[in-house]
Amino acid sequence: MLAGGRARRLGGADKPMVSVGGMSLLDRSIEACVGAGRTIVVGPHRATVHQVQHVREEPSHAGPLAALAAGVPWVRAPFVVVLAADLPFVRQETVAELLRQTAGSAIEGAVMLETQGRENPLFAAYRTAAVRRGLALALAQHGLLAGLPIRVLTRSLALRHVPDVGGVSFDCDTWEAVALARACLKSNRSPR
Image (cartoon, rainbow, N blue to C red):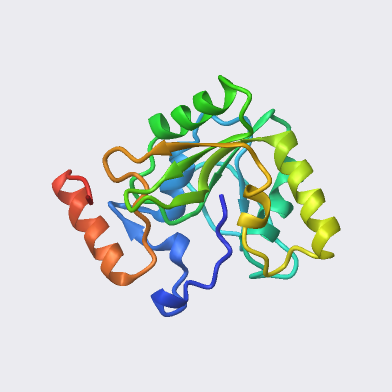
């Protein structure tokens, strides 16, 4: 779980701890990965409903690529699920589908394709070895990872795009999005 951003569009609120549907956004992402052998949260230490391992990127707020680089050394599995901690509609079934798509082929990752047609590399499953290789290549090319977009990594990987079904890729970057997510979860409807 990548949970170290500044949440500027939320006025600096601790976005992963924003409550939506009776639980924090961070816990919603953790719940979607409940079957994982190890759950790693990159960002400040926060209380969670399940046991997780907390690590920090260096320097703090260095961006998602640096956060991924901080978390991947702790991964022992052949696949790593990467989720931003602002996905209120992420489900275990969706994570399982991303893993199935990655494991069942020669591709290096399965990335959620948002309803707007954009890929979301922070809602994906990757082969751990491919991520490690891509991070090493990015570090060799750029000298450091802080501030670089995660696409520096993903453009070097063979990826499959998994279309969003039911608005699971909806994220909470603004208070308006948080309000919509709360309303949708309360009325048991999709955000899109």
